[in-house]
Image (cartoon, rainbow, N blue to C red; front, side, top):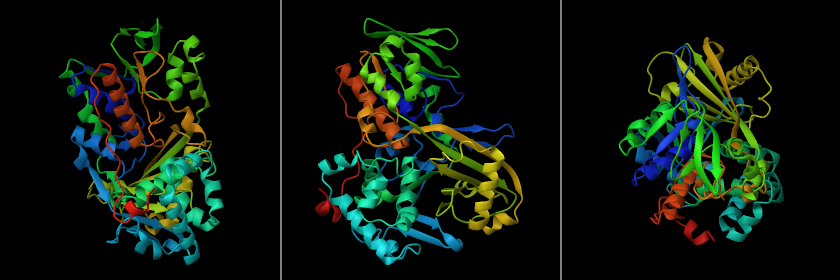
Length: 459
C-alpha cells in the first residue's frame, strides 16, 4: 500500500526473492513525494527537488537495482552564494579524512577565522563522541548543542543552518542534536565519498518507471495506479483483506503499509489504532513542510548546476535546464525552501514575488530576463519533524498484527526523514518478512566506513 520510495524498495527486494507483489498507489504515478508529473501546459516538474549524498548507500544501491544509477549526476563541490553576490565553495582535497574539506573551508569567505576554529572544534567533538554520548544528544535540540559549544549567530546562520535545515527539513531549535550531528559525521567527516552530491539529471518520474508494472508482472503481480486503500480488515490478530477505493477487496499473505504515519491510522480499525501503544505513539509525531518554486525564464540566467543560498529565504537554486542538458535559450530554475512554515500561509503570487526579489540579488541576469511561467508546489506534510524524543516514537517494521508491516522514512531506520531513510525502511521491512518466512536475508547495505585518520579518531 503506497508506491513511494519505501514501498518500491520493499516490493522490489521481495519480488527479486520470488514474492508475487501487488502494489496499490492512489496517485497516477510512482515515487510518492519524490515524483514528477506533467503540468496542464505539458512541462514535467518534480514534486520537489531531491538530492542525495554519497553516504546514502542504500538509495544508491536501490537506483542500481532499478538500472537508473547513470541518471544521477554527482558533484564534489558545494557552491554557496553569499552577500554581495560572492560565491564560496567547499570541496574535497587530497588530505586524508576527516581533513579532506579543511583547505576549502579555511578559504570560505563568509566566516572569520575565530568562527572557523570553533566550528572545527565542534566537528572534532562530533567525530570523537562515543555511542553513549550520541544517544544522549537525541534529547537536546541542535540549537542548544551549538550554543553549548560556543557557536556564534553568524556561524550558525552561514554554516550549520545551511546544511541542516535542508537535510532535516526543520529549524535548529526543533531538530534533535543526534540527527544534526550525524549529518556532519556521515557526510563531512568519516569518508570523502560521503560529501558527494547526487542530483537526478532527469525528471524524478524516469527513475521509477523501471519499478513499474512490468517488473512485478513477471512474477505474477503488478502495479495498480489511481487505486488507493480505504480500510484494513483485521480479525483474530491478522489482516484478512484491504478495502480498495473502488469497493474491491484484496487478499494476500502479507500486507505492507508504505503510507504516511497519519494515513495508516485512519485505515486501521478504531479499536486497534486507539488501543495499542505501538500505534498510539504515532499521534505524537509532527510533520514539516517543503516548498518548491518553479520558474521559467526566456534567457539564460545561471551558469552553475545548483547553488546553496546564504542569508535568504531561498535555500537552494537548481538549474534544471543545465542538469537536464537542455541547450535551448531559456532557463528553468527550481528554488527550494525546506521547513517552509513561514511560506505555508502565503499565496502563490506572494511566494513567486519573494523568490524573484531574492533571485535578483543572487543572479543579476534575472532582472532583465522575462519570466515566462511560474508555479509553486507546497508539500505541507513533506516529512516528519525530527524533534528531540521522536526516536522512541518511530516503529520497527513488524506491527502487533502478525501479517501487517510498515515502512516509510518516518519508521525506525537510524536516519532522519530522507530518501535514504525511505529506502532503508523498505529493505528492513523486506528483511522482516523474509525472516517471518524462514528465509533470513541481509538486504540493507552497510554505511560508509571511517577512512584515513578518521579511523583513528572515531569512537
